[in-house]
Amino acid sequence: MEESRILAVDIGNTNIVLSVHDGKEWGDALRVKTKSHDAVEAFKANLSTLSYEKAVVSSVVPYLTQPIIDAVKEHSGIDPVVVSNDIETGLNKSSIPAEIGADILCNLIAAHKLYPDDYVTVADFGTAFTTETVSPQGDVLGVTIGPGMMTSVKALFASAAQIPEIRLDLPNTVLGRDTVASIRAGVIYGFVGQLKSIVEQVEMEVGHKVVVIATGGFSRYLEGKIYVNKADVKHTLEGARLACILNS
Image 1 (cartoon, rainbow, N blue to C red):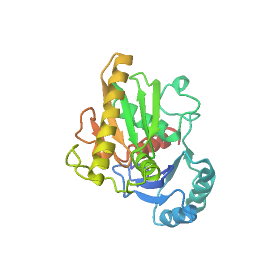
Image 2 (image 1 turned 120 degrees about the vertical axis):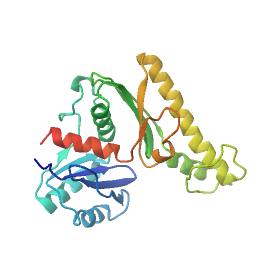
Image 3 (image 1 turned 90 degrees about the vertical axis):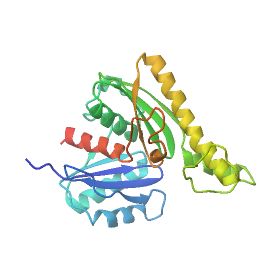
Image 4 (image 1 turned 180 degrees about the horizontal axis):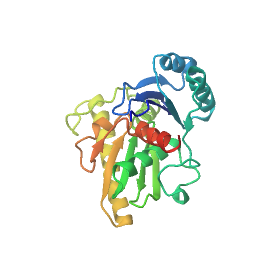
């Protein structure tokens, strides 16, 4: 039987990301700046180009959640699944913290589905840098939250008079020879080090090796680095899609 086309919407602190999965693969990911004054109208414009039979919304921006849900209903007549710890996730519900973010929950849903027999840590390199770990039994073991890569760069730019605001690109070396190269090396290799340290601590506490998935806008910089088994910028969307399937 042909699978339904599922629209997944991830409302993050920086971007609203939407994409349609046709049952086999994802289409293009469309983005709208979350804090733009016309975010909902821009979302509607992108939505008008898509066709789908089911929909799911994951949001960490409460004031946009209902307007986006309403936009999906208005466009398609579909009542989307809304990701929360009240829905079916495939995880042990009693282990899910009450304050868990919808994006983190999506990451865990997809991680446990991909690697059901392993301990899995997802490292999400977005506005915040988060790690979240799930056990083979589907227990949510815990989360870390810190400032993300660009959040760190912007804070540095705002606080230091001689630091320029830069674009983050992967440096060729950790030995920067000018300010821009030095910032890139410090931020990116610094985050590699953070992930390495967190993974080592998680493995010590759970007593097992963990599979590591990197996601978020800057996860492409981590692919091939130590401790990262898989890098996928659409991992959060995949978790939302799985949540939609489980609840419709």
